[in-house]
Each structure stands twice: as C-alpha cells, then as structure tokens.
Image 1 (cartoon, rainbow, N blue to C red):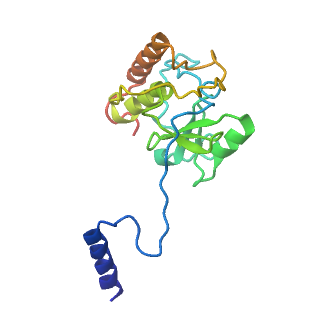
Image 2: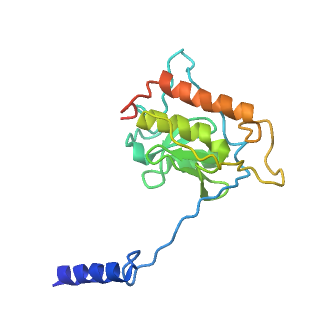
Image 3: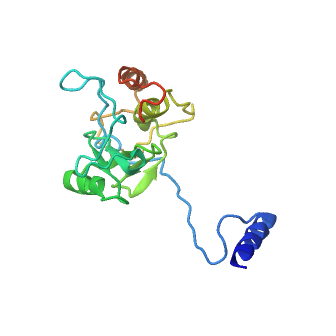
Length: 199
C-alpha cells in the first residue's frame, strides 16, 4: 500500500509537471558564481613535469594526503598548491587544508566542479575564463578529451579590481590564456590523459 501511494504521488507529480520535490520535502537550487575575487591569489598553473622529472597526472591514482581515501568522487584538488584531500562528506581533510593554508579554490575530482571557500559557493567553470585551464586539464585526464568550452566565457575577476593582478591566471590577457590552455592540453597528454586515464 505504501508502494502504491508513492507510485501514485510520482504519477501525479509528473502529470502536473511538478516533479522537483514530493510534498513535504524542501529543496534548493545552486547558482554558481560567475565572479570571484579569489581567482588570482588562490590558483597556480598546473605542472606537466614533477620534481623528479615524472609526468604529472592529477587524477590518476589520486588519494587523500591525510587518510588515503581514493574514491575520485570523494577527492578535491587544491587549485593553489595542487594537494589532494578528501571532501567534507568523508573526513573533511580538504576543508582542514583550506583553513590551515588559506587556499580558497578547490576542484572536485569526480564532477570537476570548483568550490571557493572564500565565497562559500560553487564557481561556474564554463563561464569563468580563468578556470578554463584547470577544468580543461582535469577533463582531459578524466575523460580523455578536451571539453567544449563556451565562447561567451569572460573574466571572473571583480570589476572593482579587488583581486591582485599578476599572481596567477590573468583572464584579460588572451596570450596568457591561450598559453595556459595549450599547457593544459599538453600536460594532460603528457600525463597519459587518454581514455580511462583517471580510473
């Protein structure tokens, strides 16, 4: 009888077009930000070659530096120092890393979303031009191909100049942007970014 009432409720919701949440359940939508004052200070370009001359792949065999969690969907990559730690819903080691270092921007290695601790919000990886090199590199490592990015992307830096210029990705400099995108593509290929490279 309970099974039938749930089925009837789902059918009624689909008939009315209101299939978002069943009666009595609250929900919310997430609106990623398209401007972030932390983009410059809290990011550093990805490396193609590591300290020992090895090829760098940020997603293959990634694990939390603190607890060893290795499920990619549960891992985050700091976009400033490139350390990998587990997400809040595991043991929150990335949150602890952010609090200890002040590094604000992280990328989830599962869905490639970017979160800013400073803004306490997701950032729009498709519309913020400064995030494209990071997103492209990770997408290449995980999916084996560069993503299709919108041509409508623009700088995500605040118009009031709140972020410090010259210390990271400069979204207004097309030559720098193209160089970083090329580096993302080359780095992903060098790191073995073929199909299935991220596991």
